[in-house]
Length: 209
Image (cartoon, rainbow, N blue to C red; front, side):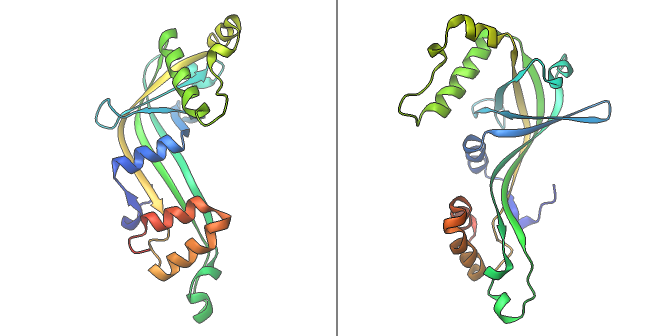
């Protein structure tokens, strides 16, 4: 990943929080020279290993399932807030017009090893925790026990748990740090209504805004 120094994010707490708030990841493995890509939600266990473990599940109909007879190297990308940045928001637009558009974004890249876990108890635990996490803000949270037992069993037979042990993790938080503080503040202000999450990220991660 192209990584100018001012965009590099190595703080594990910040990286873990991005994963937990944006758990849908792009998951890529290479098989016979071809890239097999999937998009999967994960839970993060910070307590295991140097960088933690990701847990999720895949459909057995997913081509990735047949590739996981043995653990495989994997590349995982988590995407957070992003926004188009208009040059009209920069001070230079009014002075010299030597400005161009760009895109702000925050991502986390993970390298590790993915394996399948063919254990129904383990799978149920992954699903139950993911469900509890993402139903937590609802007035009447759905839980697995709400569905008939035989129906849940049928669904469980179609999927398998996967686990990724993370070997490295790095973030790229591109939030206008390559612009002046005045430009960064102008961009944050312009995005307050359009994209409040990115507006907040600029003010949080830009050193002087």
